[in-house]
Image 1 (cartoon, helix red, strand yellow):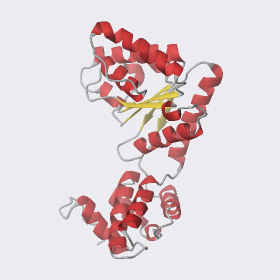
Image 2 (cartoon, helix red, strand yellow):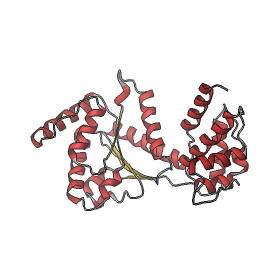
Image 3 (spheres, helix red, strand yellow):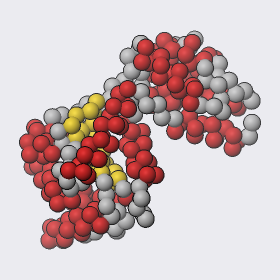
Image 4 (cartoon, helix red, strand yellow):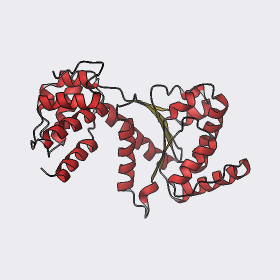
Length: 285
């Protein structure tokens, strides 16, 4: 097995998307609201709350890829604009990040120029026919005493969605609270609520593992169904940690010239990810 074969297989594991119920409900719900917004001229957004590792970033990538691939625009790269709220977000950084996503260079953030850049942003969003704006890491607005800054940002986003008719969805960890705590009017424009949680061990988790190994053809991952309890213990039901574990185990197997993952590969993969001094004992021992 060549280095290129190993690299391609690991990349395929990384890109696997399983439309399990929570993931699919959120994905389908967002797409339905975007279509409704386009038909009605009344942009309706929402929020997605998901703990780290449960697929929030992957969902954003899937949504963006879907709109880019199915857009009939000459330049479909900006069909969906995705930005992240910085650790200390402000309206200048939000405007600049959106403009950069649309291909505009960073600008001077003098107050007097900020209004001009906002006008440029709104025109660009309309001209480029952007269909959806996603803001990740929105929980940063709920950290510390940021009432004034958070209100300025929500005022900005209200103006953008009102003038462009583009729905906005905000994503965040469990710190992402009730949007009405910051701004009731902003919350009214984002009424939809979606949530993705780690898998509990049960039928849905078992079905997820079966679908996962079925989706990966270059290497046999069928062992994961037979040791699903140990895998759940190792990953706490996190899809991201599962991918880390399987990538590590597949690397071990393929380096030895094998295309079937064995329990011992999962044991070695666990040690590679968490180290030999991991606080939890290796469940594959």
